[in-house]
Length: 343
Image (cartoon, rainbow, N blue to C red; front, side):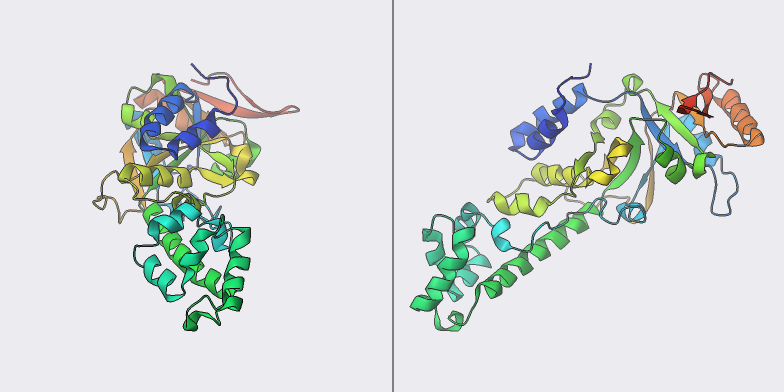
């Protein structure tokens, strides 16, 4: 049953990034709104432009799914599965609560003491609009220690941003431990047939999500949100304190499912593999990880697939999984339309 509330995805991501106890509510909300069916556009050609049916055979007979290292997605979108800093101002990241929490911990403690910036904590908004004037006034009044009296606001900002950038780099290294497989809510996207399915000569696999009985498979499916790439570091610095492993996993999942809105036509869902413990995953050195997901319910052939190729796939499907339906997209005056069963 799908919740008709149009903002359920926004609520899901809000809960995912809230208190640890809200994570359970987030996943329950997602399970209520799992889209069915989902589609996976695929090429059937290898690097020599020749047919390759091994993966298709394994998808049909074993329900295999190939999950990719994020770097294999970057040729289409270099910001995919990255935390992208949205600002060059430290005041957009560091809240008063964060400064107060870390002002007695290294390396922030040494930084604050060296430049006598603890006075800034006494202001209502130490790193917001008042921060620059507060620091500059401290310089004029000689409140800062001698080494800091020549320090300008841009200097302070640069020092703080270097730490933020370092945190962001470390977080992106964590993101590279994920492996991702992409799905769509739609089967008739001209752009996706062009980009991901051999220019309409490939296939699109349909998955009846309602029939999936593998709880891990269902748990690992997530909707993609289209606005801007994740700025997970802003969330981290905006919320002081020690983060649990589950909270970090929440930020990882968030960053894997945020894309620029120019990609919104894809209506994407993702299967996300992520390390659930502190140990390095066994697949860390593999760019493509094959897992057992679920068998497709239908194979949709591209509108420009040759008759010979079409016949080969129909024979393959009938021989190894006759319950799987084979159809084909047709080019009509109204766009792409799906044919009836061909087998």
